[in-house]
Image 1 (cartoon, rainbow, N blue to C red):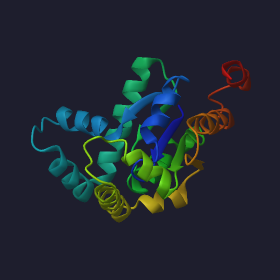
Image 2 (image 1 turned 60 degrees about the vertical axis):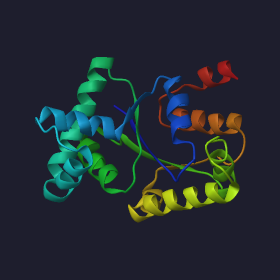
Image 3 (image 1 turned 90 degrees about the vertical axis):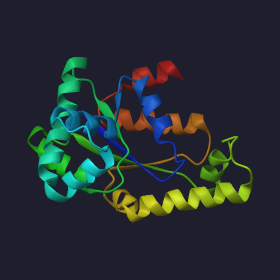
Image 4 (image 1 turned 90 degrees about the horizontal axis):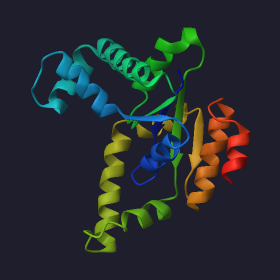
Amino acid sequence: MKIFALSGLTECGKLEAATYMRGRGVAPFKIGDLLEAVQAREGDSGDFQEWNFRQEKERPGWLIQQFHNELVDRLARLGGPPCSIDSLYGPVLAERLRRLTEPEGRQVVVVYIDASPEARLARQLLDPRLPSLEEAKRILAHKDANKIAKGNLQVRRIADEVIDNSDSLKAFHQRLDDMLVRHGCLTTDLVLGAS
């Protein structure tokens, strides 16, 4: 089981990466969806954010074990393909998942999607609800500050792969293909055949 744990700042391209990788046989999962399933299994119907925060504080090891179990169960139902999970806000989940899967070899690949501030702002501006460039800059800065406060830049420091997404979509997809080949999830024949 290969787990590609995706992270990056706002508008870096995590969703695009998960979507593209899905077309290459990598099953995408949202971390929040998996944790909500754990909460439901526990019979707790309260506010998810409050429940998750409480578990992270009171029983972080249990929470990550349950997250891992939920992920493994879902992958087994799909036949055990490689998967992506997004989005890591801090390094703790990745580090603990690595420890849980280490006996099987290096299964967790932390992937930090990087993009220039200009590229991320250009993507933010595609939202038709934004009234101005200044508002787009303000929203981007606010979202980035929240992610950085939760440890996003620490994820970059522990990343196994840093994939740039500052230029064309074609170039980004090629970098993702190269990564999948490096980790044995895609053969070069498939990459060349798709070009």
